[in-house]
Structure formats: C-alpha cells, structure tokens
Length: 345
Image (cartoon, rainbow, N blue to C red; front, side, top):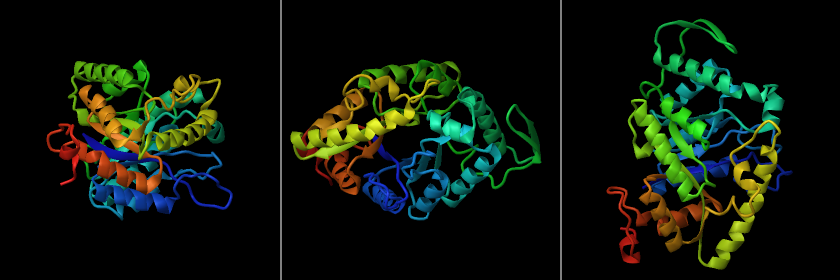
C-alpha cells in the first residue's frame, strides 16, 4: 500500500479564522511528506469561497516542485469548465517539465453553484465543456504538428502547443467519481480514478469492481495504482482524543456541505450529508492499531493507494508515518499485523 496526501490551503489574512494551513505552511508540510515516504501531494482548486482557498493550483504545485525531488504533484481537481484548454495545456506541461515529469493532473466538472454563477457558466454545460476541454488537452500534448479546433465552446486556428510535457503521451489524468455513470465514463475514457473520503469499504469495493470491469471491457489495463482512495486521518493517543478531533472534522465538513448545495446538483458529499454522522463514519480517526485494521480492510478489497488528509497538520503526518505506515510493506504490499513487525527499521 502506498500513501499520498490530499489537501487544501489558504492565503493568510487577518480575517480568516480557518484552521487550514497557509500556502507557506502547506509547502513545508508537503515537502516533509516527501521525506516521510509519501508518494504524492494532491491539492484542490476553488474560487469565490471567501476563505482564500487555493485558486491557482498549478502555481502552488510549481512552487512545491522547486522544494521536492520525488513527490508527485497532483491536482484534485482542476475544474475544466473554468479554463481555456490551450492555456491549461501549456501551464500543465510547463509544470511537468519543471518537475521532471511528476505531474498527476486531476480534472473535474465542478459542483459548487457559486463558482458556476461567478464564472457565468451554466451548470448544464459542465459535462460538454469538460469533454471538449479533455479533447483539446490530449490533442495539444500529443501533437507536435499544428492543428485547428472547431468546437461548441472553443475555437483555435493553426496552433502548436508548447512546451510538450515530459510524460508520454501526456501526464496521467485522474478524475474524482462516485456515481455509476461517472465511474463508467472514467473507465471508458482511460482516466485514473479518485474515490471519495466518505464512502464505506463496501461502496469502495463495488466501485472498484465496476471500474475494473468497465476498463477491461473497453480494452484497458487495470492496475490498482490507478485508483486512489481519499481518507481523513487523525492518529490519536486515546479514544477520547479521537472523538474530539472527529467533532472538529464535522464542523469543517459542514462548511463544505453548505457551499455544495444547489437546486441544479452538487457535490458527492451531499449524498452523505443528510444522514447524521455519515460524513465522518469512514474517517480514520482512532488509535494507530485500529487505523491499521481499517486500512487492512481496504487492502483486502484491492485498495493499494490512499490519499491522506491529516487533520492536525505536520504533527499528524509524522504520527501517521511513524505509527501506521510501517504496518504496510511497501515492497510486497503485505500487512504486518504485530506491533513488533510494525516497528520502523
């Protein structure tokens, strides 16, 4: 089992009471994650929240590229309906070049109604805009000849997109999906898959089987490393400490729920929001041994890649690396069940 980090950050100002890390703190946190053995940093994109959230994700990840050597630099996700596809192709390829081929480009359709309203993009256009942008991105990266594009939303004449990315044919494309339709579409498109932090192991199992079946049925190759499962994590010293941390996490999630509500649709989080405790039910908030058992349950259904949101910052990341990660043999994928076996070498 491999581990990455998943998170957000905010630009610091005097008005914010958020417990989120500042941009500078996130860069320190992610750079330390590399030294602790984490594989990747996946970072969100949001606009118009009033919380100073990350809006220029590729810029933050470019700064992180200058601080790291092996950490993969992920987006979770760049919302394609907001972006000119050619400019996005150029910016993403530039990061891939500067990082030596470490970009994992997570892409999505968007879900926050205030973002669609702010950009004056109708929510019903989200899917066709996403599809057209993917088409232009892939063409931009794979073609070294000039081309033109005539689409519903974008038109380009006699262009060649520069620079080409380091990774061939292009950086891996990841999508966050939860519904049956979106998972089938992800598989048919050959995308890697990010599964949400709220889903139960039973739901994850069903989604893995659906994705694998659809991928192989369309001639693709299934690799467990192509699927990442997000999980909120808090490694506690006691059950009481875990319970208090879970209450804080619920307050944070409530804010996300409120900006996700819309008559026209919304985030996958809404599928859990109306059941008390559902958004926290599968969070890994516990003492280390119990967290290891819950991760082993995911490993048994074929999960090999976990994206950790460590609520508590760098200290929690260190606890997880010290008390949980040694339980999983990175070479063989096997789980070390006894405390003695889990001692760091």
